[in-house]
Image 1 (cartoon, rainbow over the protein chains, first blue to last red):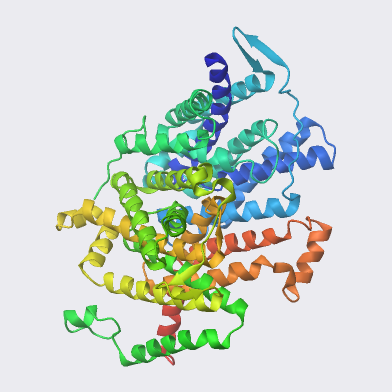
Image 2 (cartoon, rainbow over the protein chains, first blue to last red):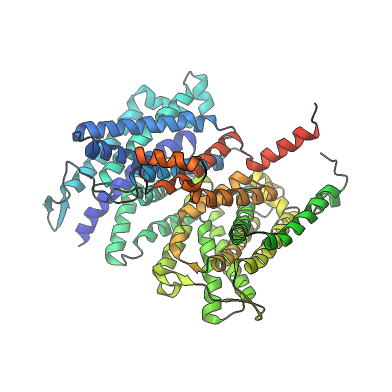
Length: 290
Length: 350
C-alpha cells in the first residue's frame, strides 16, 4: 500500500515539479508568478491533439509541432503584452498573467468545447511493471524519466551555455546585465518560451492520465505553484523537490486519511510552511534594500 | 487642484459645492431608479451594487494597503453561507444574520492576516489563494452546508414585518447598505487608519520606522476587507435566492481583483466605476450572440472555425483582454482615465 502510494505520488509529483520549474524560470527573471502557465500548457496539449486527431499526423510530428507552438506562444505573450506594460509592479504583472489565463481558457473552450476527449499517447497507462509490492505503469515511468531528463538538461543549460548564464545574470541584476551587453528583453522572451515549453511537456504527460478538456491544467497549475512556493520560488532544485514532496504527501494523505480532502491538504501545508518559513523550504530568506 | 489650507479641509467628506450637487443628484437618482427601470435593470443594479461593495472592500486591502489577495471568493462564500445558515437554522432576523455573516468573515480575515504579516508578493498570493480554495472545498464537502447541491436562501423579512421578495424591494436594502458602507470606506481612508494603510503600501519598513504598528494595521486591513466581502456575500445569497459552493471559485476571486484593477487601484471612486462597468460587461457578454452585428459575425466565425456550443466563452476572452489592456496601457484604470479627461477639459484651450 505504502509503496504503491509512493509510486503514484512520485508520478504526479513529476508533473507538479515540471509546472513548478516552469513557473520558477519565469519568476526568477521577471519576478512574476505566471498564472497563465497552466492554460499555455493546456492549449499546447490541445494543439498536439488537433495534429493527431484532426490532421492524423504521427506522434513525432504532432508533439514537435505542439512544443514549437508552446515556445511561440510564450514568446508572443511576452513580446506583445508584457513588454509593453507601463508601470510594471508585482500586482499589475500578476494581473496581466491572470488576464492571459482567462483569454487562453476562453479560446480553448470556444475552439474545442467543454466535452472531454481522450488523448492518444505512445506509452500506455495499462502496461505495468512490477516493483516488489507495487506496480508502476509504463506511463508513470516515462513521466518520471522525462521530468528528470528535462531537469538534467536545464541544469546543463544554466551551467554551461551562454544563454543560460546570461539568464542567471539577468535574474541577479538586470541593469548590470544590460551594462554588460546582455539584451535583457530578449532574455525575458527566451525565458517565457522555455517556460512554456516545459509547461507543455507537463501538459502532454498529464493528458493521457486525466482526460483532455479546458480544465486539464487548472489543478496542476495551482499545485505546481504551491510546490514552487513550498520549495522556494527562487531555487530551481528546491521547487522540483517541492513538487515531488507535494505529490507524495498529497497521495499519502489521500490513501491513509481522507480521499475527500486530498486537494485541500496541499494548500494547508503551504499556509503552514509559509507561517514558519516565509520564503519556502529551500530558499534563502529574502533581504530587501530599503 | 485646489489648495488645501488646513487639516479639516483634507478630511471632509466632499470638498466642493459641485461635488455636493452631484452627490445629492446621485442619491436622488438611486431613489427614483427602481420606479422607472424594468426588472432586468433592477436585477443588474443589485448585482452591480454587490460587486461595488466587494470591490471597495478588496481595494482597501489591495489598493490602499498593497497586500494582494486571490482568495476573496472565500470570504464571499463565508458571508453568504453564514448569513443563510444563521437565518434558516437559528432563525436570526435578517440584519443581525447579515452582520453575523460579516463578523465571521472578519474573524477569518483576521486569521488569514496573521500569516500574511510575513509574506510578500507571490507567497502572499499563494497563501490567500490556498485559503480561498480550502474554504470553498470545505463548504462543498460538508453536508451541514448543503454539500455540492448548495442551499436555498430563506424568505426574507425586514424587522420581522416587511416581507421582501422581488428584486425591486431587495434593491433598497442592497443599495442602502452599499451606499453606507462605501461612504464609510471613503471616510475611513481619510483618517489615521487610511493614512497608515497607504504608508504601509508605499513602504512598510518606512511606515514602521515612523511608528505605524504593522501587525495591527495589516491584520486590520485584512479584517475590514473581509467584512465588506462577507456582507456582500450575504446580500448575494438573497439576490440569487440559492447558493452553491462551486460558484465561489478561483475565477470569482480573479474577477474581484479585476474589478479593482480596472476601476483604479487605491481609489474608492474608481472601485465604484470598476464594479459597475465590469458587472455590466459581464452581464452583456453572457449573451454575446444576441448582440446586434457583432453577434452574427461571431456566430459565423464559430460555425466555420470554432465550436458553436462554446460561444459564451467569448466573454472570458474579452474580459481577459480588457484586463491585460487596462493594466498595460492605463495602470490607474478607469479612474486614471477619468482624471486625465477632467484635467484636459479644465485647462482646455491650453
